[in-house]
Amino acid sequence: EPEVTQTPSHQVTQMGQEVILRCVPISNHLYFYWYRQILGQKVEFLVSFYNNEISEKSEIFDDQFSVERPDGSNFTLKIRSTKLEDSAMYFCASSESQGATNFRPQHFGDGTRLSIL
Amino acid sequence: AQKVTQAQTEISVVEKEDVTLDCVYETRDTTYYLFWYKQPPSGELVFLIRRNSFDEQNEISGRYSWNFQKSTSSFNFTITASQVVDSAVYFCALSERGIKAAGNKLTFGGGTRVLVKP
Image (cartoon, rainbow over all chains, first blue to last red; front, side, top):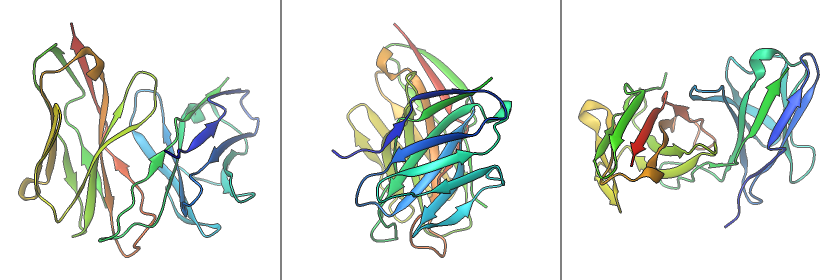
């Protein structure tokens, strides 16, 4: 079964450095998402992306964050200048279209654990 | 705004006991979807079930069962005859259909940690 893949599985970065988290969504999926889970807390929505633009973002997703689909397969999350509180597990997800009669679930990757020192 | 509440932060049981996880949600949308995910110690999110708001049938899958009650905005999850491998954090989640037919975010509850002791 096709799956969402995320790399790296663990990223350690110095505070203030830029970090790029990479995701390869399932190939025929149209919608892409990033979620964040701080250790021991709930999973929080960051951003959704469709047709090469952000369709929705949360208040967590401030100017330090950006997303990009640089080619036909990758979907990236960039954090410009990392802070200690950015330490978390970051999950990428993708889905086909969703609708009342044609629902398609979000498929999650295994996550990237980001540790900011 | 959508909200999901899992009042139980941690439940500890002995193997073979049944365990029920509560989930209460809030939404103003008439069409929405409810989910349960399992997060084992390895950290990935494992999809367990999805329910549409217009389908209140309860569901059973092996040792897992789900009770959806729209009248009380609840979507509870029961593990029957628990096993040590069931030890994990379980998340309930909600997605509203809204005005967009697609690409709608998931809102997760705070999770319930289940510890099954041998």
